[in-house]
Image 1 (cartoon, rainbow over the protein chains, first blue to last red):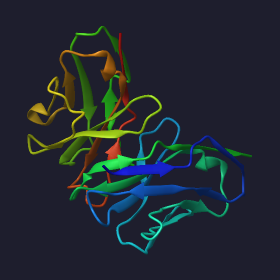
Image 2: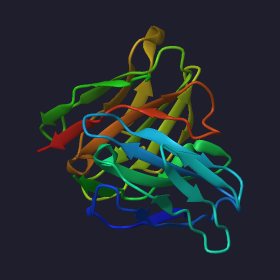
Image 3: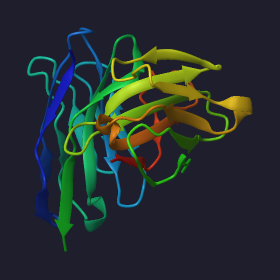
Length: 115
Length: 115
C-alpha cells in the first residue's frame, strides 16, 4: 500500500534558523499522487499548509516551500528562517486512489522553535 | 478560518459499550470524513461520506462502525460494541467538494479510551 515517511521528531531549532523536514513517499495505487503538507498548531485542528499536484512543481505558503520530486519520491518541507509561531506538528501526506479523500499521512514531526 | 468541532474531546468507556463521536462540520461542506490515529502511529483514513451515503471505507472501518448525518445535524461515528483496539484519537474532517485539492478541514480530535 501507500506510505509516507518523514523526519522523526521532535525537532528543535532557534528562531531565524533554517529548517528542513524530510518526507519520502511510496505510492502503489497511483503513479503520480498529489502531495500535501498539513500542520497542527497548538490547540487547533489539522489544516492544509501547502499542496502540489504536479511532479516537478514547487508549492509555497507562509514562507514554507516543498518541491515534488518524482525521481527521489520526496517532498521535503523547507523554510529559510523560522519563527516561534511556526512551532507546531507537521504532517506530510499523499492523496491517491482516484480520490484524495483517502489521504495517507506520515507520523508527523513536532517542531519547536526557540526564541 | 473555518472550524470543525468535535464532541466529546475525550471519552472513557468500558469494552463492549457503545460510543458515539459527534462532529459539527464546516457549514456548507458536503463531504465528511473520519480518520483514526493510534498513539505513536500515523493518522489513517476510516471512511468518507457524501449525500447520506458512505463513499469509501478502509479495512479499519469494521462492521461495528457506522456513520450517519441525520437531518444535516452532527456527522457521527458510532462504535457498537467497542473493543480495546478501538482506543485512539478520532479526527473528523469536512470539505466543500471531493477532496481533489486536499483541502480538508479537520477537528481537534476525540480521544477514545476503551478499558
